[in-house]
Image (cartoon, rainbow, N blue to C red; front, side, top):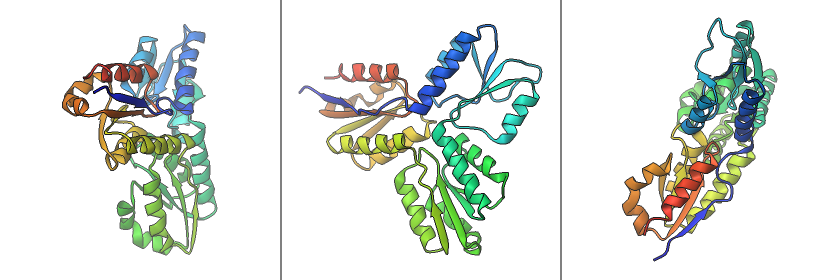
Amino acid sequence: MKKNIKLAKHAGFCYGVKRAVETTKKLKTENKDTEIWVLGELIHNSQVIHSLSELGINTVDELPENGSGICVIRSHGASPGIFKDIKSKGYEVVDLTCPDVKKVQQKAIQLVQEGFLLVIVGKPEHPEVSAIKANAQIYGDDIVVTPDVESLKAYETKLKEHKKIGVVVQTTQRIEVLKNVINYLTGIAKELRIFNTICASTSLRQNEARQLAEESDLMVVVGSKKSANTTHLAEILTDITKTIHIETDAELDKYSAIIEKSVNIGVTAGASTPEDIIEKVLKKLNEYK
């Protein structure tokens, strides 16, 4: 039976990621004799990082003390301390923090300045979350970072000591996680202020993928295992239909038995997945009988 393979309309690069990748490449094109450095992975996709390296763009965890050139702040943002350190080492800074991430930082700062205990809903080790916390911390230390409601319960005593609790959320989080946190805090806080800072692209992508999963025997999620928005997509879809999460088309053969049994196959991809990788996955899926 012929397979019906359908790609989600909003799959692949979001605005913030596209802007970061295109601007970084343009910087190198316009500054051929200048070293271009990216502090940490520009986006969570090893194929993109490799392509930047081939253009002569350096991805590093720490800048050389005696280096020179332009240092790019990646889409996840960075702490004020990192900005200061880059400048003190003599590098020019180009800030490519996603505008949506900047908004979360600003809301977090606002809540701390107004005397709220700040709850950041997100993965504590994620660079975006680390940067949000670091920016807010300049104005106060009453900050809790939590990936889910269960982890938040460990801070119940601290939460009950504060009359005012404010919430921001990692841009790529699942709305279900935020709802659970809000429901829990509603029973604790005297005053609760919530900024739903999940970006529009994430919400759109998740909703569209849900709809596609409802009519699919199998969902294929394409993107890095390190990408928060991609792993969240896979988590959401697993509850709806059979779902596999792959980084490239090379991994499809591991799931050949499942693919061959499936007729209606839906494909979606994370916000840091390049178009050419998605196209290769679609091409290979069409080769299965």
